[in-house]
Image (cartoon, rainbow, N blue to C red; front, side, top):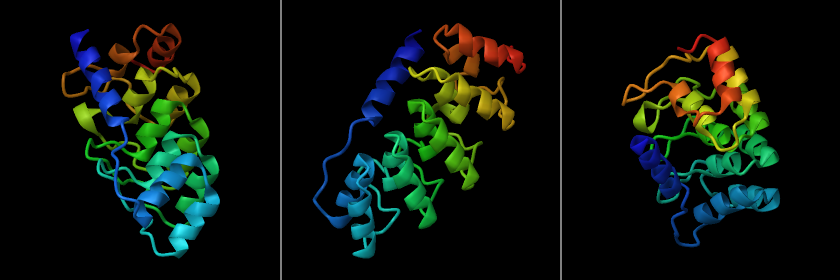
Length: 181
């Protein structure tokens, strides 16, 4: 239980945005986060690097994915944003979209070659983020399992995804139906 609490604190910390200067890169990231396609296009045309990162390593694609900005995610992917960029915590846009319950974005990122097996902090892949999410999105969990993720994979403390469900019976049932022990 203490390990779960520590991880939730960790997630709270990584959700805090670092204040940075009003450079074109910072404005691009903020515009993507807010879903302002006009500003995103403007700053990209002005020369802002599409994969610019803030102080914690978040890119415009990550911020858009995390905030459910489908159109912005699509726009950035069309312009070849790095779908597998990682934050200083080892998280990706795919992990963030799964955590926030954005199934359309999860599918879009995977269609654009997001690495479904990439592991971030604590040895978590995207399935760990999906099962532990407060959004409890069973559709995302099913989808990820259909894509071949191992429901018995262990993180760095030897916990499997089922141990991170917080007792969500619907998610536990889906994991069990797919071979979780």
